[in-house]
Amino acid sequence: MYSYLALGDSYTIGEQVAFPLNFPNQMVQLLRQQNIAIADPVIVATTGFTTDELQAAIRENNINEQFSIVSLLIGVNNQYRGRSLANYEEEFTQLLQQAIHFANDNGEKVFVLSIPDWGATPFAEGKDRMQIATEIDAYNAAAKKISQAHQCHFIDITDSTRANGNKQIFLAEDKLHPSAKEYAVWALRLADSIVATL
Image 1 (cartoon, rainbow, N blue to C red):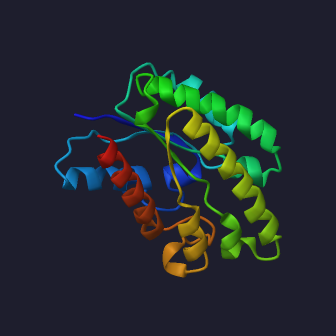
Image 2 (cartoon, rainbow, N blue to C red):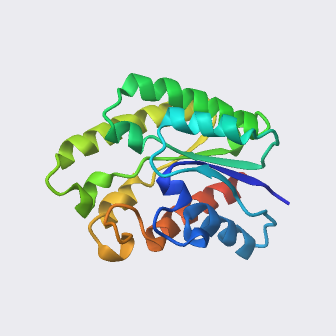
C-alpha cells in the first residue's frame, strides 16, 4: 500500500471544489483505477499559504512518518504578495529538502508541480497580466532548477492554466481558482509521472 503526502496551498486543498475533487484525491483515484494500492492522501495545505507559512504548518502537524510519494506545489502567494525571487528560492529549497526527507530521503519520490498563472483568469482583470506571467515564469524556472538539482520530478501545469484560464468550465465560482475539470488535468499529469517512476 503506497502512501501519499501533498504539500501546498489553495491549489492543493482545492479551494471552492468538493474535497474529493482536488488534484491529490483525483490522482489517487487514477492510480486505483490502474490497480495501484494507495491510501487516501495526507494533505498539508491551506488557502493563502506562502512558503514560510507552509513550513510552519508542517512543523505544527508534527509529521514523523515516511511516504511513498510526496507532491509540492507552492509559491503563488509569494508572488501575489510581491516577495522576492531570492526569498522564494531559499524557502522553496528548504521545503523541497523537507519533502525529500518525508519521501525516505529519495528525491525520485518527490513531485513538484509548477505554479499556475492566475493572471490568465478573469480575477486578474485590470492587473498587469504580463508582469504576473513574467514573475511566475521566474519562480517556476527557479523551482525547476532546484528540483532537478535535488533529483526530483518537475511537472509543468502552468501551460494548462494559461490555455484554460479564461474558460468558465475550468474555473471555480470565484473565477480565480481552478474547477475540478482543471484539477483533472493536473491529476493525470501527476499520475502518469508517478506510474512511470513506480
